Amino acid sequence: MYYDMIMTGFGGQGIQMISQLVAVASIRKGLNITYLPSYGVEKRGGRTNVTVVVSDEDIGSPITNMPCALIAMDRIGLDFYQPVLKSAGVLIYNSNLIPPDAIERNDIDIVKVNCNDEAVAIGNAKLANMVTLGTLIGRIDFLKYEDIENIIEEVIPEHHRKTIPDNLKAVKRGMEISKNN
Amino acid sequence: MSEKKLTKGNIALAEGAIQAGCRFYFGYPITPQNDIPEYLAMNLPKVGGTFVPAESEIASINMVMGASASGVRAMTSSSGPGISLMQEGISYMAGSEIPGVIVNIMRCGPGLGGIDPTQGDYSQAVHGGGHGDYRNIVLAPASVQEMFDLTIKAFELSDKYRNPSMIIADAMIGQFQEACRLEPDHTVEVFEKPWSLTGAQGRSPQILKSLFLGPGEQETHNRDLQKKYREIEEKETIAESFMLDDAEIMVVAFGTPSRISKTAIRYLREDGVKAGLFRPVTLFPFPQSELHDYSDKIKKILVVEMNTGQMLNDVKVSLCKDAEVSFYGRPGGGIPYPNEIAEEILKALKK
Image 1 (tube, each protein chain N blue to C red):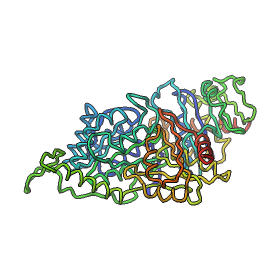
Image 2 (tube, helix red, strand yellow):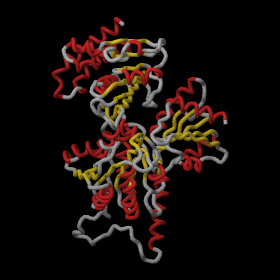
Image 3 (cartoon, chains in turn orange, brown):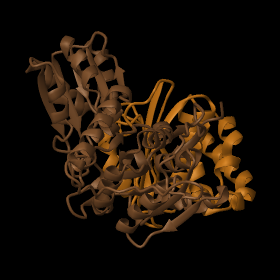
Image 4 (cartoon, each protein chain N blue to C red):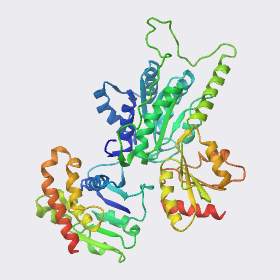
């Protein structure tokens, strides 16, 4: 089993958080992971990209130029990585910030999510990342909802633990969207 | 064995230092190694250690020298320009046979360069950097787990041979995260230090120095140091082999390029191309004889580095004379993708 993904957007969208949830949940299942964040100029509003590789074998490269999945939370990230997504790969994109006509590929599995609207409907705009995570969980077979539920407490900082129920609600909503897409 | 935790390379290194018994850290900030002092500033005092934010890298290395001279385990970390500033101190430590661990999370150069991953400081670490006829023990981790394990190793070797140890890792190894066992896999080795300067109570004074002015004194000292380096070469070489048993081409790489090469090799193996990898884990001592033995059977060699060919010569002098050596290098923060290395392997095979 081998699965690599690139998650991209701007600082503050919670991309590092959902990448960590995927990484820690995978480790708990006995899988190997590499988690490579962009570094150096982290700030709210700056670019943020993460490459996560998951495998049941030893992982060689922590970088990829043909990922199995691309999670694009904004237009700049989509435009940059769309061309390299593997054929038949999964593209999950935030349609609140990315117009559908930005999608140029027709050989991929496209999941359109109004991340921001969905998050607001659950009660907090900051949940957009968790909706996206749910959508991803709906598309991969090595992680299930329970795997995220089991580890969310150790990843979310202590002072935000009271938001866990809403976060999980957002994951579930994302999974529904994935199913209907 | 403890549960593996998602850990950043730099943090694994810092925690490794604490568990190795390092109780003194001196350093000055620079990207991409800042996680190390940040972690140690928070956690060294908890175990009774001392964290000093030094006024410069020159001060840092001299504080390491002073602390180590008193017999404790001490460390500094920096990157590129900061490591250059430390070279005089490292040379003094080698000359005075004072241990100590120096960590270089490499950024691009020359000069202030950039903060992207690179391996441009191989020659500086392995072939001197400072003045005089000396060698550093140099370890090159390629995973987060090795950032932890090899830091412990660096302290052990440094004390065992009374010689500075360097850990060099490109910024990717420092910044990326993997599952890591944050416990040593063996009892950490500690050494008696009868040479250390502890106040001379109940014994005659002793001196640690690198100045030898008597007739022939310096030459004798140099010969003694060389004897020590030969012993290190004989006993402490570490290397990893990957899919080399039936290989027709051998990639030689350390750090991040070795990781990416593994993926390239797996791609090629799916198409029946018999490629394998040789990874030096210790850069000094360099695994010369292992490489030589492999090149007896495998005649095509591709050296991959994230620089313009600094390990290349060490590989060349290790190989059998009839080995055909190709090189693929990416300086200045360029990181090769697996398919790019795969293409270079195929090119080298066709040569």
